Length: 213
Image (cartoon, rainbow, N blue to C red; front, side, top):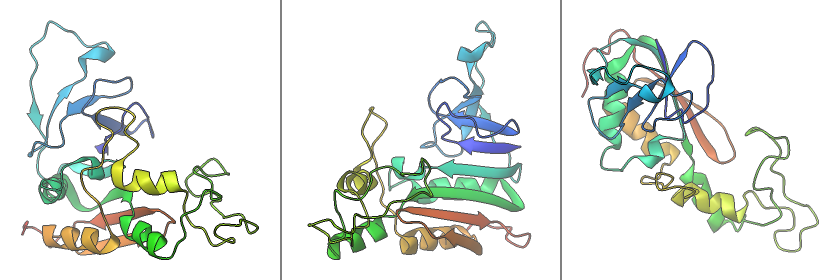
């Protein structure tokens, strides 16, 4: 079983189960990630029988083959961050991967100190994907080509886009504090991938990690 946690209405593959707090198209299971342990119910809005009783089911220990949680953890209160990561640790199988992506607020602070926030940097990738071209204009009068992040993208990293009532950030992450929390939860193998404004990390529960600290 592979879980796409916080899927919204997007599908990443037929072998993934989409889990979200909202009853949206393509969402298979409804789950409030603020409540630990995670309990889910089937999404009745996508064709399931409405006259059947609603049963919430707890995910079993060591039952999930892979987890993806992209742009979700920052929307959960900082008071619950460690609890949620412990829950991910509980349900993932040993040697299986959890992929987490959150805004890199550490880099945002560096960009602020180094005066690298500039309008000439594209808000969205020129290439149309998150690995695309965010280069500053070398002829920009303001940053003189040294800009690294657009002001709106910089703001979103701390606040969220706030396009709806759930689209707010309740926790900020740096590479250091995210790694520290993951280690505290019990993960030993933690791999970060470099990105201009995101923290992308894969973490694994090894076979000998049989206890949550």
